[in-house]
Image (cartoon, rainbow, N blue to C red; front, side, top):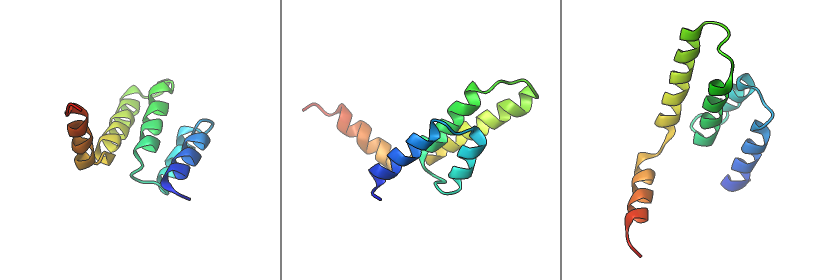
Length: 86
């Protein structure tokens, strides 16, 4: 399976999975930014019915994982190419 097919497979299965199921997938794809972003999105949309502090800490941890998963060199190249006039 090529990377594009892999991304499609992960994104199509994420639409109907719970946050805990997505966390299980994270063990297979630990640095896959779109998956980490979906996990964060799930946390943001989840009700804070219980302990707000631990829920907020969980959201912060998930957001930090998303940030850490970004390849900064690749991002810099993308932004450099985008800002160059054609």
